[in-house]
Image (cartoon, rainbow, N blue to C red; front, side, top):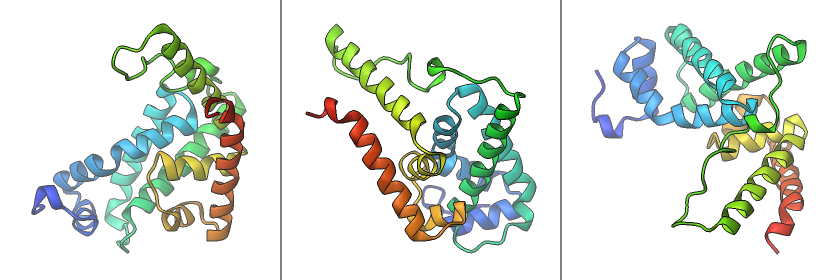
Length: 192
């Protein structure tokens, strides 16, 4: 049983999931579920694959919970599993066992822009910016895109990214820097 439900820390969640406590698993999902799903959504490029990968991640977490070695890095452990699941999905896609999705599969493409009654010009501009961003993101080298997604959509610290990707800190920082520079260059006409 978890205490202080609104203030449960990662250590309590870790201890709970090792005991297969459903309440701890629920707390884990509330805290990290949205970030995990967003990471997978942007990494895989379509909602169906992201949902499948997310389900696989949750099954792996549940399956490996009793042997999880709690070291204060719960978030990094989760995103390491998500990273590996996304690599599996991308490999299957390259082998042809998963369909490739076009631009229409990018998340948010058909969503309306959140604004107080935007006019047609604002809607068109927002859609253009979103499409350009998604194209620029897809055009990044895989290593740079991965670090960018883990940081911006997964909310991981660089220490957690280093652990999840098993790369040196300098490498993770450089990949992020180059990703941001490339994205900024691709989108600079919208910020002029």
